[in-house]
Structures are given as structure tokens and as C-alpha cells.
Image 1 (tube, rainbow, N blue to C red):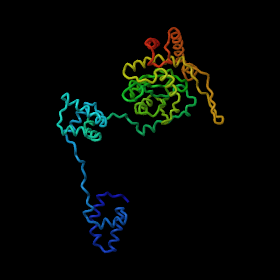
Image 2 (cartoon, one colour):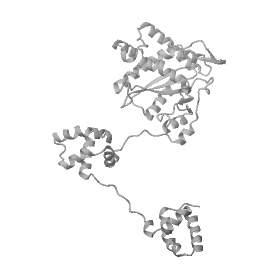
Image 3 (tube, rainbow, N blue to C red):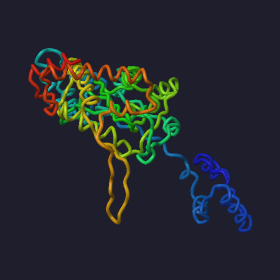
Length: 392
């Protein structure tokens, strides 16, 4: 049975109630059966409704919100909101006792005593409600674009157990934030890309966290890395899971996968490089502005050679469970460059270029005092930072 509206029930009570009260017992029983079947009321409640006075079933007039503050208060709040930098209602309410006298003292606002008392007494919720119109016309709150469920479902999940022995070109990507002790405001990020097969790592400095900048970085890295970019595995952040990166991967024939939410071990290769490369070089301080982004770019331009040509790393060969313990076996430590040179999936012209770069950089590193890469970037001397530029 389809559910009827409350207004329809009231009309039915008005139409049936009088006939029900004047009918004989047998007729009453028949009317009550039909009324219960139509309205869905309990039988006892239906009897009370039909026997009640018609006025009791009339709809009550809608209640309006009691207006306490007039247009003068709203206009004053708009001026205060603009002067405060368009903060939220809770922050503006705490600022009113300080901001309102300052504006009056400098002649920017003149209120009579009654309106002034109302402005100082307004609640944060009322402030947000009265400023909803100006806030909407000003653009409202900026929100990060959410990932649509359909797009998320179209990107397959890749776990740590799926990466057995991939060829070079299947990479993991992650973002490292340089916000220091707080994530408020705008600060720099580092996009880290690590090849699963070889451990080859690239870092790109980003001024802000934005999807289009990440796509541009992937476009540059696709042409810069010494292998064909075959697959990208990311976390579930909206800076990665969006239409821009999905379209980029589709146009270039790159497999696009994502890890499981809250499972950092699914991206164990790039997570390890976040600490051993980015945090070891840059540290945990806050970096913001164009100057910081340019310094990070110069640092990564030089350190990529040190990390990929002169830093051997272990690679897991296998593991087995013996009782409650897991025994792991590792290959002999090699540099990412050496693993690429030993791979059959890398073309010979690319290997020749790698050998040429390796020979050139060996002479350069031996002829200059290189900075201590174990020291965080924020504590490097000016001479060390100059050498980073010379090593590029």
C-alpha cells in the first residue's frame, strides 16, 4: 500500500468523520475498516481521530523564526566580517569586542547604542546565518574537489602482495608535506616517485597541493626517467584520484592503480624513500613560498644523481615463515642505476646514456667536496647549498 501524505489524511478525516459519528454500529465498523486500510492508522487511534472534533484535525499555522536582529545589525556584521578577513562566525564572535571599537575609533563604523549592543550580543550561529548571503556571493568556502564513487571504483586496488617481480616502469607515487608542526595555511610539498623494480627515485617540489600541478610533474617525469612509465600506484588522496590524472594515464597507456585506504604497507617502496630521501635531506621544518620551492627544486636536481647512482639499497629476494618468525632473504645491495643496467627491459641506448652520466658524475663528485646529505636541508651552510647548484 502506498503511503499517503498528512494533508490527505486530514482531508479524509474531515470527509469521513461526520458520517462515521452518525452511522449505526455495523456501518461504523465498515467505515472504520476502510479508513484503517487507507490511512494505515492503528484501529484504536483511528477511532479516536474519527470521534474527535473536526477543528482538532486542522493543520496548525507554520511557526516563523522570531526576528531579533534587523537590517542594521546585518549590515554592521558584513562590514566587520570583511574587515576581519572573512573569518567564520565563531572566530568573528570572539573578535567583535576588539574589532568593533577599533573600527569606531578610526571612523569606519558608526552605530547607535541599541544596534551596537545587539552586534555585541549576537551568537556565532546567528552570525553565520546572517552572513550566508554575502558569503555565497563572495564564493563561499573553498572545498577540495571530492572524488566521485564511480571514478574510485574504476581504479583497481593494488596491494603489496601484487608486486612480485615487475619490470622497470611500474612506480609508486606519494606526497610529503612540509608544513612543520601545523597543516594550516599554504606550504610546499614534495612529489616522490619510486620505481618498484629498481628503486629509482625522483622528487619534484610543489608550491601547493593541487591536482593539475601533479599531472604536470608526471608529464615531466615521464620524459625524464630512464625507463618507460608503465604504471602508477598512488594512495586515495583527491590530489591523485581525480579526472585529470585518470585522463593523463589513459592517454599515455599507463596503468593507474591505488592502494587500500589506511594501509601504508601497500606503498612500502615509496614510503621508505619518503624517510630515507626526503625527510633525511629536508627534515620536518615548514617550507613555504616561491623561494623555498626553488631551493627544493635545486636540491632534488642534484640529489637525484646521488640517490640513484651512488646509494646502494637492499631488495627483498624472498621470505619464509618458520613457526612464529619470518626469515627474509635479500639480494646483494645495488644502486638503482646498476639494477637498470642489469635489466633486460631497458633498451641499450638508454643504458649507454646511463653509463655516460655515471662516468661524468663520478669525476665531478670526486673533484668537489659534496655537502653532507645526512644533515637536514634547513641546517646546511651557504657553501653546501652553492655546491648543490654546481652539482646540477
